[in-house]
Image (cartoon, rainbow, N blue to C red; front, top):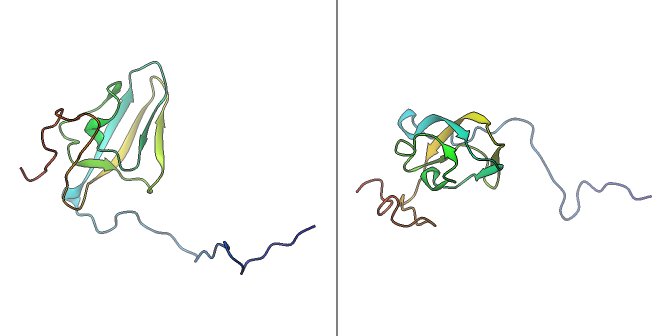
Length: 114
């Protein structure tokens, strides 16, 4: 029988406490959306997907969501079963705020400033 090594390679050292996601965001960089899956199959939205580029079966205010992503931990996603709705917090994209994507031309340019 092996014993657990808490100090070796690959060991996780976790400090007690909580981390607030995107704590530096202002109220203008946040919003809450209600998203509904109107389709007949489950749909997932990843943590860094530009929301207007999400599956067309998801119903929400895409225009208001331009330049936003879900406010969830990096690498995670939210799953929507058919007919399910969720109220989710969203935050603006950072950096150059350019949104190259799979649906080029849907939102021209992807620049929040232009």
